[in-house]
Image (tube, rainbow, N blue to C red; front, side):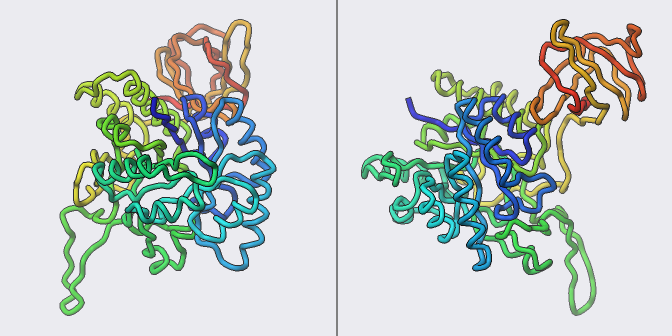
Length: 410
């Protein structure tokens, strides 16, 4: 059976745990400023590496460190130190684009994966990067026919990576797309002086623009104001065709997104992979159900098929904001969990809840779990609903932890 790795994002311990709990085979993450999400409000530190690796390896998953920015001379010592720290912590691979990072990872004895920014689009590029890497990410502009041909040539030529195994091919399966697709985008650098290739993109492409005639000052707005903001890629409906092409790694985009997003997207794609492994057909009804579940969490609308199915142009989002079909309101915080009776206690600091509500509970070690609250007590009295300020208890088979955040689906 073809070896498939489901690669999930983690921008926090909550997301990391959510990925692992929902079937991720590998998790990718960044540390500090040397990654493509260095502007993220939540990011890991070098001191977090041992705990990240421990959690991944405990679940038989791999930990891949993204060190995929363009590097300047003054940062080379930091790159080398971080690679050494990653090796000491047991990190399984470094995701890289810059030659200096590739060499530093090799010197530290770490496997290298080539980032999508390398824009690998043909077998000659594959042969070149195979000298350095065990996994290569193909350009997002390729069709499935082109991907299949590259995978077939890798097998026929027996192209081996430095680790002594057949070179693996990774492609993007789901999530946000950059207006530059696989290329290096310089728009943020031109407008704000902050480079997307350095992890500090201000995403000017995600905004509305008005066209102005410089001679007459006449202005007009195009039909879709968000003409540079692509919809999210969604391939779950034809994932069987993607897997049949011979790829080995499916990447889910979203290090900047919430733990509930990571949980839902990982679980849906894991289910689709298992469906394919059983040799079962991908029906329209099944695809619609998967997409419905994906649409409930953060998204900018879906581009179904992308360049993989030969489409020539991305579909543009109608808004820079989420188009999720389900909204989640913060309700309160777990204050205790009683293991023997399996009862959780929480303080409602933001809004009320009712028996039968669907809740998301998100925490450092809890990850992101979705539960239905069958009944509740408010201030030690059985109730159908509770208000802001109440202390509630409710039955819960999943172990929650003090400090976990509770969100109510509305």
